[in-house]
Image (cartoon, rainbow, N blue to C red; front, side, top):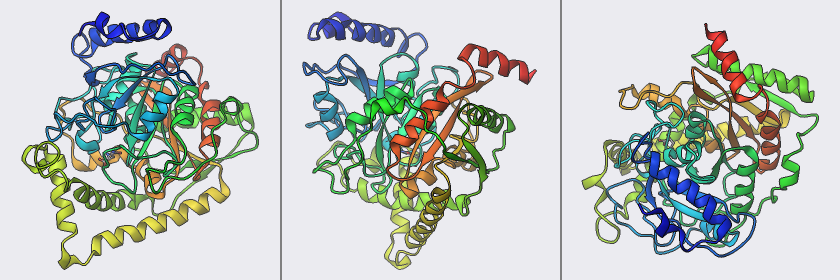
Length: 454
Ligand code: GLN
């Protein structure tokens, strides 16, 4: 990569910022720490000015950016060049943001750890031998590694929040339908949502405020309350937090959550109460049949005639499993039995969440109830499914949720998920902003936690 050649098209302020990031990428993405966060680095010239002027933004490889390679980290679309901008990209460009390149991900967003990419796994910049979490592995790792200011990911069952949690950054899954999906290569249309990944809550709120809003190109998109960036800085008063009662296997993870929530209670006088959500244990069994069916249907266009190669000929085992599973579930002889059953449980869960949000302003839990595994380690499917046990319920019901870093255990970042009711994204960001600074600064926190472990 020739950094100088890349820079000639940009103005002075942007140039400095871009140069810093390109040098860091050059040093540690394919060489040095070999993070492998990017599949393509190719800054896109933009002379517009706005809320994102000078901000350098990385984009997950399933979101179309005109002229860049939207491969979904698959051999299927290895050479596919986007002929147009997704609506979120148009909005970013209109506000002066600079797209720096396309990030690595699980193949077609099917995965938990970032390891199903056809172009190698993404390393976790904080703990280099561990997985970064998936499927928006490269986007979260790029922010954590200091390769960009912010990034876009997509979240179908946890793909923004899981890698954000493991890489120690902030990731938001907005309320379903509040961010246009036009130009996103879908994985499961009724759950997919594009969202921001950033170094802190304020930056995530800024990017979300740019990409949110109704879009005529996405039939299900809806107008939502525009996020007031000043308000994000004020912690809400008199709220009631539901602390999720869930059997987290490793007690140390739940302990950090409890400690921070206790601090929030003292500082802001928020009310805290434990909450159990009925049928939460059915979330995974509900999520996958729906994903398999919708994924099977959405991949039928990759038959090797119009876009790239025939998917079944070149994809990895996880993608193939979903295609075969989806084709089996949809067989006429089953008369939609499994799919309809899943939809029924989905409605059941929606009702339970509605009840919970009548009583509480938000639900707090670990983002991921387990630690990330070592790259290459073989783990069981049951263990793999645990990655999004607490994130996929939010997609099933269509609400919003954020993951924020709140501490580390043996140097591994731990994320807290804060979930709110539909269209309460602003309230969610305000709560997250209030909690963000708790637990002391990072160095003191790490020392304290390490001491506690001895
Ligand atoms: N891990 C989940 C899955 O494999 C979620 C993926 C995602 O959110 N894109 O389906």
